Image 1: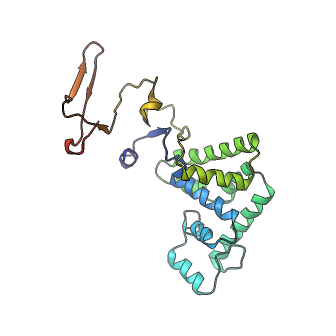
Image 2: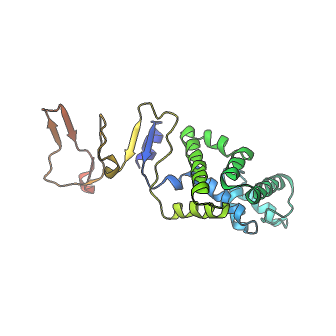
Image 3: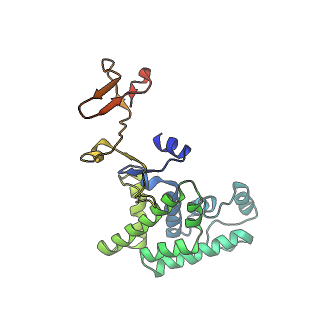
Length: 231
């Protein structure tokens, strides 16, 4: 809810320790491609990549390809734009077998337009930073735990399924004023000039505001009383 509201108003923000990092659209797009390259014969995975932001095939185009006898195993022959997509997937598949995890990701970023597409979306610079964070994670896991390409792909999928707590990458405007979203636990020991605490379970006996004259500070509550929520 808060993210949608901030993005709608084009306000700069960062998330610290949230559960959605690995399920952000840019990370899902990358993960879908990695999974597809792990299983060349899995047509469902290939279709997911073809329909995604990397290639952008419409359902109609995919239907025409299938109706004409075409396969969605990307190592098979195809025609026109579909064949170009298959050739790129074959090239990337070969990279997964010849290169290390981090080198493969770097090659994916180089050979596809994923970074360019991501940069053109709202908060594009932050999204690109998130993708580069995954590349850094791949380097770390490759070095510390000797992850193979398949092992890293499975690890990334697991993080998505389990909604692992992970903050966004430091964005390009990290030094500038911006809104920080975090849990109360993550905020312990930190100080901010203005703090909003949202979605408390309200107590009807609570007053609507609190003024601390000694420290020149104040707090107020806002929200729908019938929902039992307050900020």
